[in-house]
Image 1: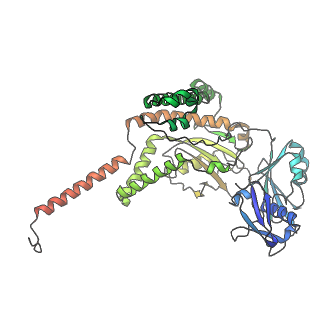
Image 2: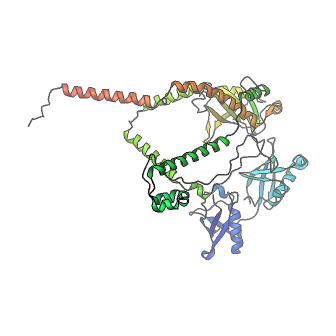
Image 3: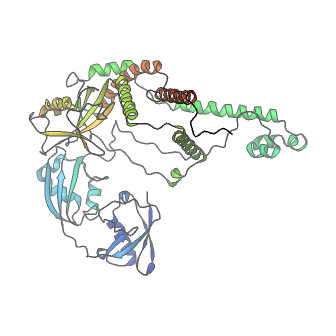
Length: 494
């Protein structure tokens, strides 16, 4: 991710601009023009012969660190005009109004909410991946600061504090720097005094007389190195054991299953996906993308395996590929009898339920209609990415929804479609995750017996063995036919 950019201004002047991922291109133009003492409305930024959109964030422009950008005159000078703002509040409704680009977000919220403004103790605005939380930040940010000088925009308003954490969201820990490990040699080998001085300086310093007068024994050195290596491995295993996270016991899971109230016999739960803060994204350092010796050896191994498979593998016909596809589907069906489906509604509510892998999309549609205000509503279901509208006659296995999937609900009406009495039965996202974990654990215990009975991977090695046997039989038949026939007329012995 770019943290520093070089902008090429007038007279080939190079201007260094410090940026962050959530900074807009318009802000970069303003910072460069202030150093150049020019009007920012008369210039655009060009990168690889392409004019950048002033409203886009640096995060989405694919600009590398220390990249060279060119400041070019704009075809038309930008003018600050009114911006159409649609504010979506927590209940799903939207409030609209037109404001100048110099208006700050705090005043926009007060004007649109009017009497309902007192219900928000700590308002927060979410735009793309920017979160502006609290009164101070909202007063400092204007529409122009987030790249909006004209057109229309949709902002989402939430009520949350900056220090609020979400219980069921994984927050990545700080990444440790990579340490290149020296290559390890298996077995005993001869080590001279120079290698000993480099690899184990402590041994040489403690015994200086031995290093001067007595030649080191290779067997003793190998034993010492093996003992030191064994101690390091023991320390690593102990550290891994100490870093293990506590898991839920069977008794805790049974108590949880008895305490929670499901909506129906399918263990259906309704939860809000925005009941806390979003995931804290952390940009990686440049050292993370530098390959180590271990990474290169793994890439080389994969390339060798893929090349050997292409050279030695047998060509597959369409019938063979279809047979392999059906075999994989049968294996999935045998392994996963049930699948976890989450239906994502436009108002950020998620309906989690359990279906059989052989059920169709039509069964999910009939299941959703029970919880809608208007059961005869015309809607469709789709998965993303890419957006794929599900056909009602297809099974969940054919749609790729096994073992779990997130399905989105779409209809022409923008109002809330779920029954209002369901809002009193909303659970937290952590409870929904634990309920899904219980289903996965039961499914895993059932699949272990199947995996032990089938030692080989299904649909690959056995199939290739059958193909090889068929080809050998075919070649042998051809050889016998060739040997049993008479000599051809054109053959002349010497």
